[in-house]
Length: 161
Image (cartoon, rainbow, N blue to C red; front, side):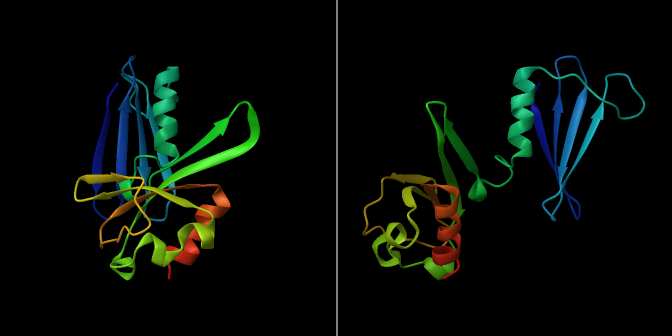
């Protein structure tokens, strides 16, 4: 029931899941951000449909949502059952050279976008709740939280600046 990952040069990244019954499900993520889904039942010569368990379905859902494709672009959306209209996204972003040397305060992230930087990973070291004076370096991975629109503003107004 493990997931295997294989880089396919010139094609994309293939993730393959073998179910408890021995069926295989393969998803290939293409550079165009589209994906191909292949299913082959145990012992079958050609691809077909496979029955998967709830835990396998959750794993497949994670793959299809892109949650494990690229660490620097990982995202999770949280919906609260008691607050049906509240959806919060937590997203990771790779910090590029254009932001190196700038602090969170310099970028005015919350003021300009409404989003909040809740953590930064740098060369394997994590800083949770970085202070406004925290200065970015090229290659940092920032964990940002907010509503979908706030994260879109963060991408436009901060990452692309």
